[in-house]
Each structure stands twice: as structure tokens, then as C-alpha cells.
Image 1 (cartoon, rainbow, N blue to C red):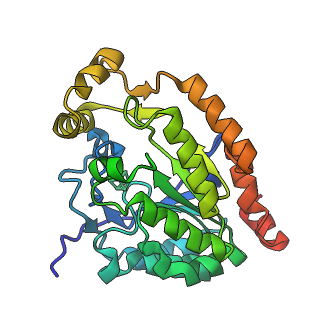
Image 2: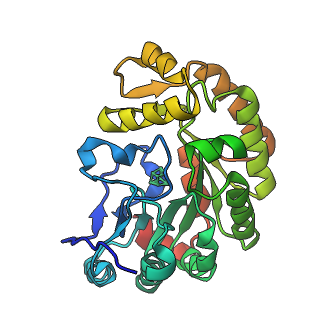
Length: 299
Ligand code: SF4
């Protein structure tokens, strides 16, 4: 197969931290640019990222050579977020194995991993997840905007179905891997009913999730908003008008019933023993790292 390779100068970026930092990550890595999962709300389509033809996946040339060089040069180990701007288990990964190669390097050089995905193909790499988890810290987030099979076909058309994602979550959870649900975004007027929220918590629990972290709404801007609205017109005629009337040109578009939803969600999580606060979720996987490694990873 012919690939449209892109050139990158560096691949490992340090992450600025604040009090509530995102799943405890220290670095970010993207081995690919673009994503073929087709989520209609994807923020990575925004102009500021400058990725034209976002649905086409392009691998980064010599990504693993660059990555190894940069990992070796870091005095401070840490947790690396893989594929935040592009699902690491995309259409090219089966053949190119850049994600698998990166995981092997994280295991070799003593780095932890924070991975999010909408694919079940990650099961291929269970062996490496176990190695990373034992030594360096690991958290896997299966990303969902809905537990509904039917809605997911329209709003995340090329991603694995919610049932397949829950199945993969269970497989990893049964191997003792710390994983859960990144419930994000929850789409106003579309996936934000009380019943759906309760269903999400129930399915996550059933699959062996340790946590669910929600985002009650969606962000919309420039060409990403245009794309989202065009898809709404196609699948849910009339819904664009409701969005436009409610949010105008706002970037952050929160679910109108957020207080009620949050209450229902928190009660369901507490009842089912699921973490939902960022600090608890981070502590949950830090506690699984051997004590000696914790000192070097998180000081
Ligand atoms: S899987 Fe993630 S990166 Fe890919 S289209 Fe969906 S939201 Fe965007």
C-alpha cells in the first residue's frame, strides 16, 4: 500500500501541568496525523490544528527512530499520552505497527502510558500493556459519546461499535489492566438523556471499568462546527437549528440539564463503585505502580 508520509522534527512533547492535569500525563505523542473513525464532533478538525482532509490518516516518517532518540534523552520518566489527536488504532496501524513499536519503546525505556481509543484492535497489544503496567503505570480509556449502537453508527461511523468497545474493555479488565470510560463528548439534545447516562454507567460496570470520566457537552468552532452541522442535517434534520438557537457562536456548548445529569451520574457511579473524579482516577493507577517506580515517575 502507498502511504502519504509526513515529516516531523520531533515527536515527544512535554505537557504543561496544572492542579487538575489530564489523567496524570507528562508527555504527548502522535504517531499519525488525521483519523479515519469519522466522529462527527471531532475537535481535531478545527482550523487551529491545520490538518486538511482530516479523515485521511498520514503516518509520520521515521516516527519510531525519533521517538527512541527522544525517550533516551529524557532524564525525567513519566506517563505518555498516545494518540490524543488521532486514534492510535486507525486503518493503517495493522500494517505499519507504529503504535505497537511505540509501546515496546515505552516498556523498554521505563515510561508509563495513558491511551484512549474507540477501537477494539488494541487487544493485539495486550502483552505490551501488561509489561508497561507492571513497571511504569498504565491507564486505558475507551472513549464513548453514547452507549447506543444505533446512534454510534451515525455519530462515530467508522469506529468500533459500543458493544465491541465494551467487549475489549472487559478483555483487558480481566487481565488486570486498569481501564475505564472517557465519556466525552456527551452531545446536547442527542445523547444526554438520563436513561442514556444510567445505561452508560451500567454497561461500564458490567464490562469491568474502574472509572468513568464525563464531559457534559461539546466544543464547536469554525470548520469543525460546519462539519458537525452538515452531519446533523444529514442524520438528524432540524437539530442544527436547536444548536444554533441555544449556543449561537459559543465554543463550549454544555448540556442544558447538566446539574440533573451530573447528580444522576454521580449517584450511579457511587452505587457501582466507579471512580469519576480526576484525582481518584489518577490515584487508581498510580497505586498499581511498584513503589520504587513511583518515586522516579511522579516526583
Ligand atoms: S476517534 Fe478521536 S481523533 Fe478519531 S475522529 Fe473520533 S474523536 Fe477524532
